[in-house]
Amino acid sequence: MLAQLIRTLNPRQFLQALAAIEHEAQQLPVSRSRAQRQAALTLLLVAVCLLGIHYLKFFATFRACLTQLSLWQGLAPDALWQQLTNSGFAHLIGQLWWGGWHFIGYVLLPCLFIRYVLRQPLLDFGLGLGNVRRHWAGYLLLLSPILGFVVIVSFRPDFSQHYPFYRLAGRSWFDLLAWELIYLSQF
Image 1 (cartoon, rainbow, N blue to C red):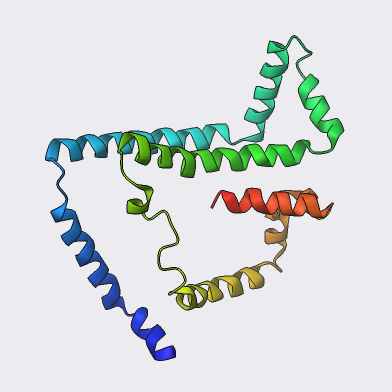
Image 2 (image 1 turned 120 degrees about the horizontal axis):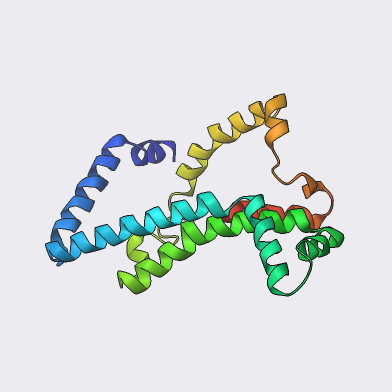
C-alpha cells in the first residue's frame, strides 16, 4: 500500500495530468471569440465576487443593513439589532452573515455562472466527489502534517487570542455545531 501511495504522489503524475488537461483543451470545439468572451466574463465575475466578499462580509455591514431594514419597516434604527441581541444569537447570526457572503461569492455565484452563463455542467469544472474514495489515503497523508502544525501552534497565546472567531461556540451544542457548519461552508 505504501509503494502504491508513493507512486500516486510521484511528481510525474502531476506532469502527466497537466499534459492530459492540455491535450483535452486542444480538442474542445470552442471558437476563439467565444473562449475570449467566456474568459472576460469569468474575470468580471471573479472581480465582482471578490469585491463583494471583501466589502459585504464585515459585522459593521451587517449592522448597517439591519439599521436600514429597521428604517424601511418604520422602526427605530436599532430595533432589529436589539431584537437579535435580546435573542442571544446576534453574534452567531453575524457569523452566519460572514459565512453566507463567503458561500455566495465562492460557491453559489460561480456555480450559477457556470451552469447558466457558460452553459456547462458543473462536473466539467471539478464540482463533485470524483475519485476521492480512491485517493483518501493520499489526502490523509497530506492532511496529517497540517493537523500536526495546527496542534503545535494552538498552544501559542496569539493563536488562542485569534481563534475561535465565534467566542460563544462553547455555550451550547447548537452554537458549536452551527458555528462549525458556518465556518466549514466558507472553505
